[in-house]
Image (tube, rainbow, N blue to C red; front, side, top):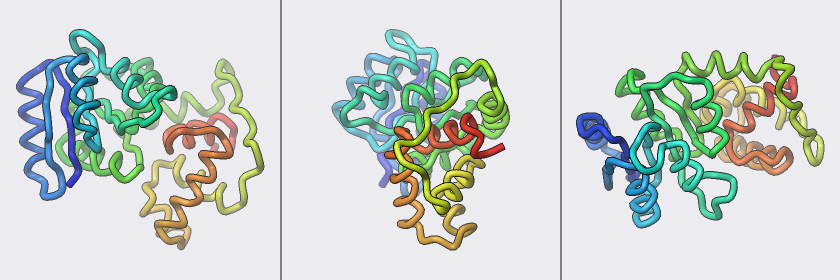
Length: 216
């Protein structure tokens, strides 16, 4: 079972998400809380597989909660998916920089919500399609952004193939099917790439690929 924590200041939203997720055979909502302080406390107590966080909440906002639970300074990070009404690039960039595994709009629909939880649990990332297009354009050819650092050691040809596929938004399973690789081999390549470029997750791998010109 994928254990999920929901944090949102609107009770109706929490109830709706709980109903959608609890209806799945492989997902169980272990807690829902109305504010950021409770989200951090409950997440650290229960160690859920995935945390669904709203951005605008009392106490601590979802971006700060994400940083505390999944940020670069976290020794044992949790997997976080930010789900919000507010489609602002600043929020998207901050959430992903703070370690979020996904970013969805609340109008994305039940199917995407469920898939985002499953993707985060298996180490993939899911971002709302309308956000993805803007995000990739932002990373691609934006002169105002610093260039991505070169890898500690060169990526192999197969690692580059996997990176390009991940940057296009493919899941591990889809990458394996496209490149005729086993799922474990795809994960091995991604882990090697993360180590070489200093990325914490596949979202950062994709960002690096677009910034460095590996994908155009």
